[in-house]
Length: 161
Image (cartoon, rainbow, N blue to C red; front, side, top):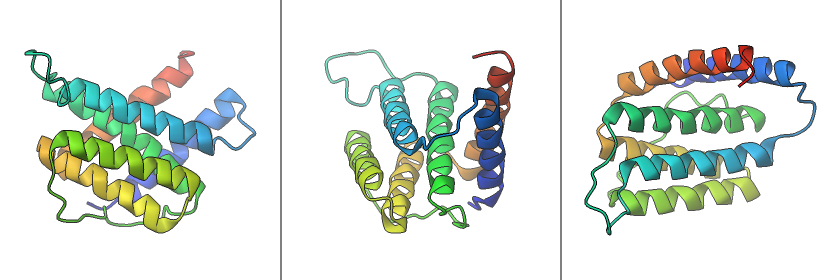
């Protein structure tokens, strides 16, 4: 999946938010925490770790929206550190349970937050790619959901979210 369209859209959204909210300080740590929170919200909707419950996961549309909430922050962090020249979604042959993938992703985010280097950034993308494959989300679904949520994020800014 080519990421350049998404990076461009995210850069424009970030600039709009910074202007609207009067952000004039480094929000890297806040965005790192936001990414971790979004990852947790995604895990919660999949319910993959809730061994004590018989209730199934949320609908795919809900899970996909939570997934792209994470993508927003992942793109934004890459822009902040100058990694928005990444063209293709880095992937690997990672094969693990969804629970394990969430734990690996959480660890990758923490490592990147403390050591914001390209290799660590790409590791997060690899983890999210593995989650997407496990959830059976394809590139077009992710792009379409990202675009839809991006528009919703603009509207939220305009209405004082």
